[in-house]
Image (cartoon, rainbow, N blue to C red; front, side):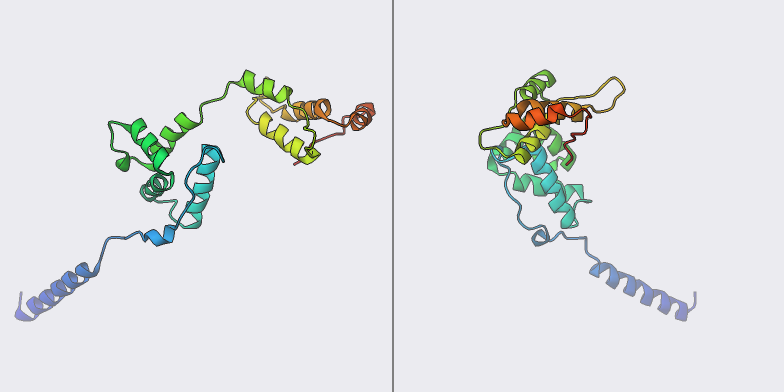
Length: 192
């Protein structure tokens, strides 16, 4: 190697060292994430909270980084549920768990699988309230039907049949019920 080549190699090495010193690992700006409500089981289900949080994380463009998502979730759930997830994860350190694992722990504890027979009973016992609008009654029937597993052997949902039957059965206004029942065709559908 001649002195000129050596000089060029040293210049390139110095340049590489200088550029490597300016490269820094990515830093997540906490301000980019912002604030999110604490979980309150009296106001919403954990499933709804998780959906809202994931929507928030997507809006903030951090949902792809599950490590950040786990940190945000642990920070946002509030002290009561942080203590709960810590207990559920023990003896493992909750701060090293991934987002999916934290969600799994909280979901299995806060959202136990409902008894389908009980859910169907609640659905069939639901009648329109004295001051409840028809739209609110239909919305509540839809919510109740969502946990009833109304499916036939073919695998298709028969929720609409049960929704229509319970809507007619539970209507407060007997004149409307009689008018619907006198129609020969099954034209009544409870479209969303």
